[in-house]
Picture 1 (cartoon, rainbow, N blue to C red):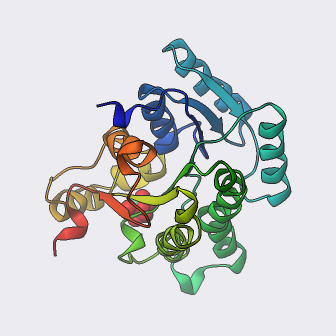
Picture 2: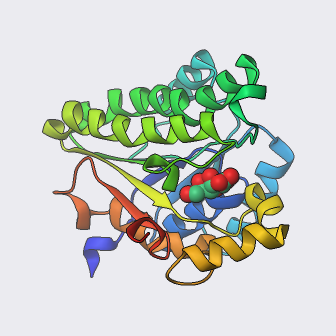
Length: 253
Ligand code: GCO
């Protein structure tokens, strides 16, 4: 089963001081990767790093704003200078902003698009510039059920996640020939702090449980296996795909 082994690989996970990103970093570390945690809150970032190091994992931190092109370029130049080759990039950083479009300000629309979509392009470009030279790399973008289906009040998130699905295909189109595989994961409704308000809403909670064949919310750690698969040799001939880990929600009416 060495095809899933990430020993000797270094993975950068954006937005990984909490939520799904934290679970993704842990999953890659459990498979043997050195992980680079990213976030804007250095206190939270160091706390997450300390927890993973206490569990015996090899962890670095890189605090930069994924929406700031200059900061991303500088971060990758730092990695170059320190001899850190990013073998696996997980474009996870994302925000949610729930508001009907009729009441939505352009600035709020733009903030979500910048963080959830454009940042994946910027970080993907910087990582791939190095991966294509090494003729090896894995890019895993984090989509959503809203990569396929819309829900009222989350338009910018939905548009960004739909873009993530197509950005993944575009990355495959341009980078697969250099042995860089770009794929995506579409999480279902997961028990994360971003969904706290939804989980606490009895009506929404009942809807998720009735609409999901598994009849429950997902746990972040339940995404780790899909991520390790897409980050490992096991998926070397898989390109441009989005794998839904959603309890079956996207597959049924
Ligand atoms: C929402 C939720 C969703 C989920 C997830 C579903 O407001 O509907 O935040 O967007 O988080 O993206 O795949």
